[in-house]
Image (cartoon, rainbow, N blue to C red; front, top):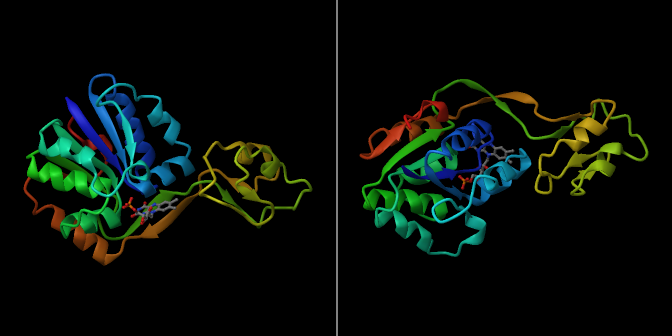
Length: 228
Ligand SMILES: Cc1cc2nc3c(=O)[nH]c(=O)nc-3n(C[C@H](O)[C@H](O)[C@H](O)COP(=O)(O)O)c2cc1C
């Protein structure tokens, strides 16, 4: 099967999505499409290079909104029927809201719109699916309560991207999720993947519910549930 897999900027279900893409990449041609936020967040969680590793050749590319212009000509592939399936996983609340209101203003929402026009099936894994609390994982985080202000700060010295301002914070736009900071801080002041509980907003759940009314769109709870 030839699949286009769109990743948006959600940390929730991101690692799981990457794992499923990796497991499918031998048996299917997979084109990876990233929203701008999707690319940033993949890097923060140290997952970007894992996707680059499975690319190579036509229809096995990785394309990011950050490399596109305004009209997204690559999404013409969907209206031309070049793909069997478009998967959007994980799909942020932002992307879902744009899909349900028919907005096509980036690589992913244009891919969805063109898939609709080209009768390409769409599988979506929205991160905001049900009301209530959800546990999710953060990228690397400096825990100031554990920082003893070493001089120099080993975590900052070891960071290959100068992402750490000692005793203050990690600049996530520079962080590549390599985890060297965490292993170099003997006081455990860098948490490489803190789990926090977040609460779904009613408006995001409402938007997700609207997805069920779209012909050609199937909604899944997890990328592991996709029937591929
Ligand atoms: C570390 C991190 C994790 C995020 N996780 C989520 C998430 O799980 N769900 C969500 O809806 N937005 C999340 N966001 C916010 C989105 O990235 C943001 O709304 C972005 O504008 C979405 O753009 P996109 O829908 O075009 O990808 C996260 C942002 C950061 C920095």
